[in-house]
Structures are given as C-alpha cells and as structure tokens.
Image 1 (cartoon, rainbow, N blue to C red):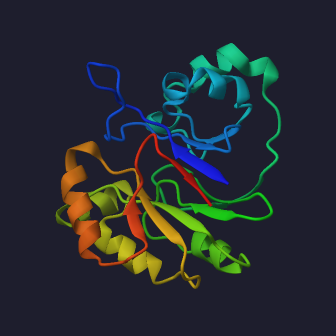
Image 2 (image 1 turned 180 degrees about the vertical axis):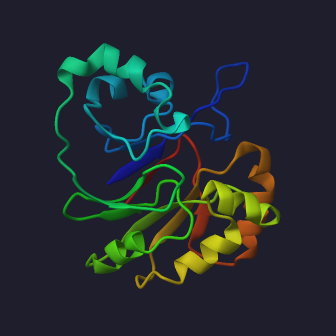
Length: 207
C-alpha cells in the first residue's frame, strides 16, 4: 500500500512546502481520504487515476478543493477496491476514524480527534497493523485549546497510544498546525517513541 500526504502550500517557485494547511491522503494513486488539497496537488497522472474519495468530516481544511475536483470528474467516480471500516471519533463535528486494508497491509487513520476509545478498539481487533496516521495539532502549552477544539497535543497523543495493543507499526503524526510546527516536532521527538515520525507532505510512504 502506498500513501502520500498531498502538499497544500507552495513557495514562490511553485515547490511544495512542509506546512500542512489542508488534509488529503492519496492511497495507491486511486483513492483519497479527505480532499482538502485534491484539486491543487495531484499530478496529471493522479488526476486521471483517482476515482474514489472518502471524507471523514466536513471541516473546510478537509474538503476545501473537493467541489472543483468533483465538478471535473464526477461522472467517472466509482467504488474503491480497498476495504474501509469507519468508527466515530471525538471531534467538534461528527467525524470518523478509518481502518484501511488491501488484504495485505492495514493502516489506521485517526482523522481529527481528541481522546477517543472506539477507534482504538477497532485497531486492536485488526489481526495486524502496519502503520498509524494520527493527528497532533497543538503543542502541550495549548492543552486547554486542544481540549476545547477536540484535537491532540503530543502529551495527549502519548496517552492515547497507551490504548493500542499492536507493536512495531510506523506511527506518523499529521495535521500539525503550521504556526506550531517546530514546537510540535520538538515535543514529538521528546516522547522518544522510536517509530513515531512527522509525516512529510508530498512523500510517498509504502508498506
């Protein structure tokens, strides 16, 4: 399974930057989870191959350019070949976390969430887990805001990972608020979890 966090911001030369303002994950070049940057970041080849979109919740950073993409390609959209299992997570609007499997590889996507339980129960029921993409939006100093907005800090993330029974999977932090990116990277490194990395926009990960 190949997964790419599509870039959502670009410098004056048109090159992708690391700031994650919009959320869109591309899986195997034919399915996306969320669609924030879908109409601005796909290559021409990817635009021709993407035919299925799963939206976890309707916040603007997750659907911003979806209308443009759908307007272009609606008649050609069809069902994915991946198996998706969704459960509610704990966000300010109804939101789902996902378990995605192609029969060989299984990946968990938290979407936007604060502390939650059903998501971890779903992951723990899976026979194996190859990777986990989980949000970390605010630094520890903004714990109260994270609670109010129903997002995670690195400290909250560490507690949530204690609910996971699987070991050895890659853990990729996503949804870092651009204004706090450097602080978040430092605090995530401070957790000293060897398998925990910050997901790089534009890079393709494969399991």
